[in-house]
Image 1: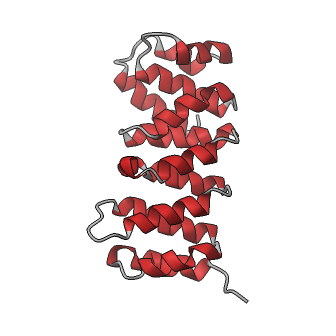
Image 2: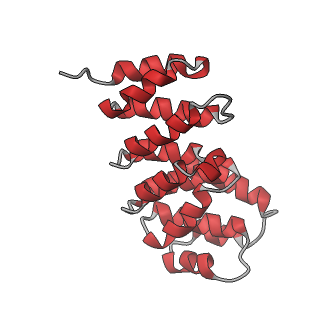
Length: 191
């Protein structure tokens, strides 16, 4: 079993109190059955998440909206599962949605997984979104250092010259300085 699916299974099994409705969601190969769970009334969150995750892994675009909602959830394990499934879904809207979530200052506390997803996707939206998000995190006393660090590390992984100015600014922040040095070392020098 895939590690991400195993982790999701353990979490939703506990959340569902071992509901008999869970096993069919984990074992069915019928994508229409899974898609029905996403739109049926009165479905618990664990059921919708399981269905969306499995549809995402299968590359079914019907999972997109549910996975984006879960990517912005307050519960980090849900965000992580959604990011994993979105990365495998292959939907061209994913990067745009992740960039919107990563740069939304009203939801910055939940931006870690959208930032990481952008780096994994390596989409054109990634570098501008990470630069914007990091620039906001460089304000004095910003409480979202994990998001800032993810941006610095992500910009280093993407190694795009456009990130050099904001990474240079990050050098002045002790919590980010070491990662910023590493990130800057990965960016090719201008000729």
